[in-house]
Image 1: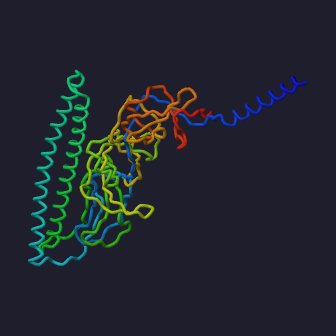
Image 2: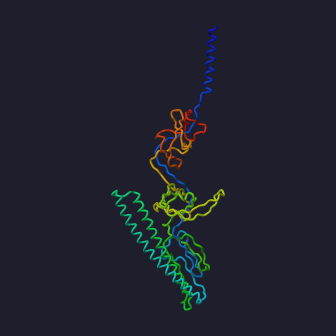
Image 3: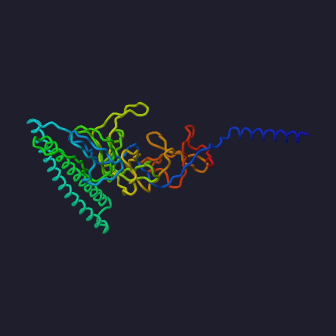
Amino acid sequence: MKHARRIRYFVVAAIVAALLLVAVWPTARLVDTGTVDRGLVRETFDAEGRTRLRDRYVVSAPVAAMARRLALEPGDTVAAGQVLVTLDPVVAPTLDARARAEAQARVAAARARLDAAREETRAAAAAAAQAIAEDERQQALLQRRLVAVEAAERAHTARQRAEREAASARFREATAAHELQAAQVVLTHGSRDRPAEAALELTAPVAGVVLRRHYESARPVQAGEALIEIGDPAGMEVEVDVLSADAVRLREGMRVELLRWGEAHALEGRVRRIEPGGFTKFSALGVEEQRVWVMVELVSPREDWQRLGEAYRVNARFVLREADDVLRVPGSAVFRHGEGHAVFRIDGRRARLVPVRTGLSGGGLVEIVDGLQEGQRVIVHPDRELEDGDRVRARSR
């Protein structure tokens, strides 16, 4: 009888002890995990921009006249020298001595600008020829592995820039010739001994496409009034307004990825120019911001972006720094610890606090310089209550 009672007491005591042990035994925390691997880490920032044509030309009326109905529409292709607008003359007053002198001075100034533009064209053509020769030399040396890849890329970029500057110089020369023609028309139409007036044809200074037309039906126009705007689609670039704090981190030639422009693949670009002056802009939340215009030239082949038009929306991702084949972890796994950073590494079923030394960060990833090894698992989004040595259990996915 006593023996059976002792057995019952012992069983009850064992059950109570087991329940107490279960109550005080620490439960394993459910945690999300990530893996330490090797790959690319980039420091970037995004900004919104829009496309624009680098060289645009507004054809305006040199004199007051009656403009005929415009047949061209936006998107139409025009050749250099093609008639864009035809102006029928109106009865114009004869120029007095002062107005004649002013018209003659404008003709002389236009002729001087044309001479200067021709010299600039020759200089730009010489610079382009030198850049082409240098690029060919660098490519030949690169094939023999006598120069670095970066040097060859710089020479190729310099060649592209010199060729585009030469094209811009030719456009400026054509525009100067057009301005001289307009100035001569004013002088001729205001002369007392002018011949019988005929229709005036305004021609395209360069080959391109029609961007905008400022009128459609026949109507009177005043001197200096804009009639039609044309541009060269090959000179497409992107203008991006970025925060001034981000602009100071940019350098000319930095790589840019152009995203969300209408296709899934990204376009390649490079920073061409950073404007020296900023401007004030209010954000969507009403916050006053200082922003800077940054010009990005397209590097991808034109076939990849030929459907882009002027003033199209584009997202630009500026690549400040990047490092390939480095040890990295999810950025949500790294947190401040003392004077540095740390992560929780999973050791079996325990969380171990590991101080780490970090490098680049961007795109949700952080470079690990010291403290972890490839293949180890870390805890992402760790709780504030989590401590070194706590039991953890990975959440099933």
